[in-house]
Image (cartoon, rainbow, N blue to C red):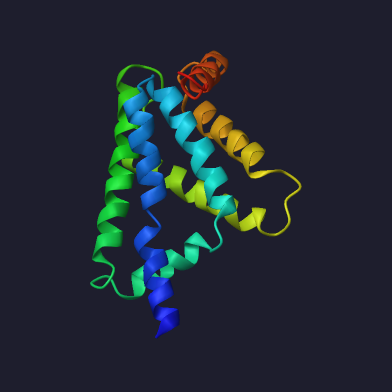
Length: 163
């Protein structure tokens, strides 16, 4: 019973960190490129430091969709908020035309996948991995590849202490 309670608590909290991250990033403003960059960088790094495997959480929640309905509702909210940023970037010309929902799902899957190979004994820190993942994701979506440096600078400025 204790194990089930621990698992339920983990599942209940699994979406909280990325949802809070997206809320903070949205509140800070910035362009869609910088917002996506900041999210991926922080999300991938955070996943690498979790004491549990996020994919195990997904599998547990899939076994009992009724019991974990709130998990799936939060997950859908996370996907929608991320897709909204991608849609904004597509609309303003920052990103090339893509399916925003599919892209949001792919971004989340990539972030979650980074945790798997990090745990195998990575020589890179979670922060380095997060930054690398953010560069790859945003660069892959950019309408103009030359915009990456400015987007990285904007993301860094939005996270500067005392801002």
